[in-house]
Image 1: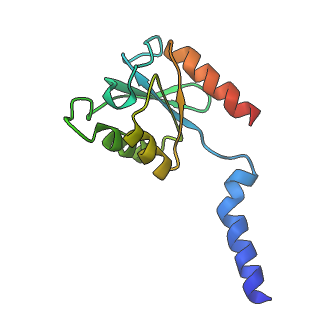
Image 2: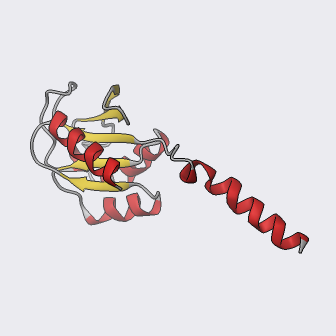
Length: 131
């Protein structure tokens, strides 16, 4: 009985933020520029920048992609870079298979989108509200 209570309490404490709706959404958009007016980059791992945005659509950081010119492994390295920034969703025109595998391993969602950054953020935030 005591063991069951301990397991139940552990589960409640682990999932409490999800149950209370306190999940923190942090969006990274692969970007051609440093502002929210820029275009979404065609390929996530090779994007010049990642614009990091909070759950309200406010720009937190315009981070230069340090892996955009890597000869190999850019997708995995970029996914790890975004995980270190606590990103929960990544938006780009296209993702390579190695990057999607790395994002899945980090439990980061990803969305394809073509257009400008503001529209991409709106799409993600409206989708998130509906879930």
